[in-house]
Amino acid sequence: MKHSYIIIDDDPQSVLNTKAIADRFQNLHYIATANTYATGLDLILECNPSIVFMEIDPANPDSNLSLMLVNELYRYLNQVPTIIVTTNNKELAFEAIKYEVFDYFLKPIDISAFRKAILKLEKTKNAKDQFFTTPAVDKEPIFSEATPIVSSPEAIVPEIVEEAHEAPVVPIVPTEEEPLQEAEDHDPESHNESPATANEPVKEEKPLIICVKSYGDYRFIEAKDICYLQADNNSTDIHLYNGEMITAFKTLKHFEGVLSSPFVRIHNSYIVNIDYVSRIHTGNSVCYIKNTTIKLPFSKSYKENVDSIINSITNGNYLEI
Image (cartoon, rainbow, N blue to C red; front, side):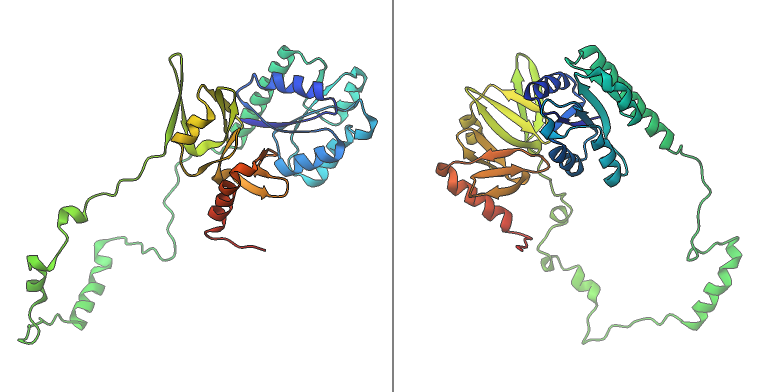
């Protein structure tokens, strides 16, 4: 089970440390970071993460980070995310208990304590899923009012007989002006399509699979799951929709040559999948990725490619307001 998470902390180094530990767990998916009370609240309401790692004793008092954020969440959400406090101040632990936070980490975060908290969270989630899952039981067949229930064959036979007497069958005799349609149907020249052609199944095109191979390790990725590709010297980082990143030891130029639509190069360092573009700001020269806070820059040399993305999105079921 994947758990999405955000980090709310006004200390950039603490953010990096928390994310570095969380990145070691495959079932955790990073969304974004906030460094103030207001931006943190807005980010939670927008992204609805499973877990929030939150500082409650900020280095900068102007950030207003505190446990009051938890109270605020109950005003807007039916289900509040799992709150895990990360702080240097152990004296606020008792106060945090009153707000029913899931766990309380003192910085620097201990990897063992982190692991235990994630395992405890998984166990709690699984227990809830089992509790709310109704076991399958054998049920009697349900009949609607429109469904006839026949207790015996005799119950329906008289009605059929009556209808047969009321509507006798009259044989149809073809006339000279109207030849039998059956003869026309059997004319082999009247059908251009053979039965074999008519019954031939239509083959669906399989999705493109990309294999990232490294020292005997074959990693298979569906192209449609790729949000964007980012150059990293002589290698390329492949970013998937679930937040996972995979490194391929090929240049971005190589991928530009082998990938076609919906992949478009917008920068010396970026190729984007059109299907994941949610916004294009030509003034700031950035593309936004759906359901994330990621902004990819595009350069003037690839302006025509960006225009083609806009045309592709607007050329369809499109309404401009």
